[in-house]
Length: 381
Ligand code: SF4
Image (cartoon, rainbow, N blue to C red; front, side, top):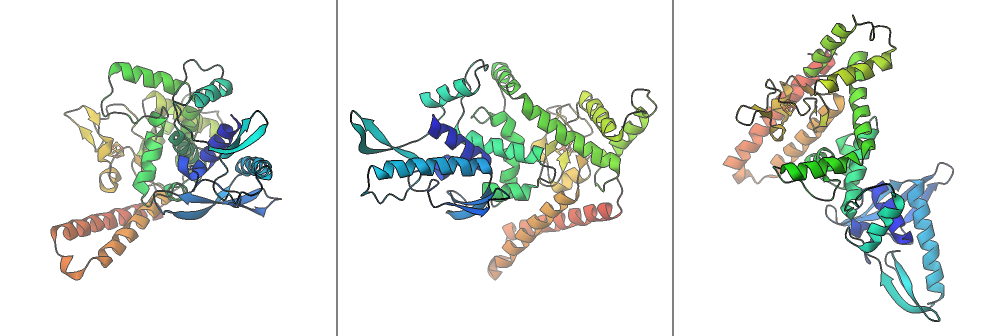
């Protein structure tokens, strides 16, 4: 149970994969954490990034990670004292088996999985009021981190999240936050859910009301930015200001302080079905309602098909809201496309793929210029 608690802490607070925390060879080791400033509770850890960089990379870690690592390290010292000849250098997630006469010298490595009885026991202990034990896969910790990071922190950017996840491309990081709620159960959603599965998922998500809260807070802060007159590009800002002006005649809205106005307005917008879904290029505020005038609306399905979202499509949509951070994301993407094009061998620069690449770059360049112009004018278009 102790090892499981340490594992969940370290994996969740650092968005690490199972093997990056606990595998025998690449898990967290005794020499992997350094104190940067004890006074400021600032620590740095080396984690092996198993899929992207395939290398040991430094990340800042919090006090809880440091405490869990310190306890594991102390325990390892105790084990190694009873096995002095050992030159063990692997992860801290092991223990000595205990026999009739104390430690018997056999090392056991600990692995975690959603179905393991220890995980089920742990959830029962940690959340005794939970009815039905959800399958908590180790990868859930990574998704959980992405969700909290993006919806909780004021200046969260996809770039910072992608760095922490060790993703080379922002799209992969976006998938983590837009699908994370649905994936908290440890499974990926099929494209069409049966009514029964949808019911089970909704019941499951209802066990995480705090996630809905942080999402709502992010939505309110976006509304606040628009009311404050912060520079945004996209038509959603105009819609919010129109609604605010309508509400300002109402007796329950006019006397409210600014932040309460933003909350009231956000509740009104939620009541009308609007909600926030983050993309690297914009926040989509369309929510889940039909939205016939969304740029990605499909007559065939009768819904907005957000899987078609793109910088170009969303830049003209009534429900998009783009701020400076999104434009920085687009510029980073443009720079990486440009670098890729420059590395193409000269003889391949005119083939179909290269022309499609060039057209994507041209498109992106135009959209960036459009947003830059709107943001510099400091107006809601
Ligand atoms: S076009 Fe973009 S902003 Fe508009 S509804 Fe679709 S995904 Fe959202």
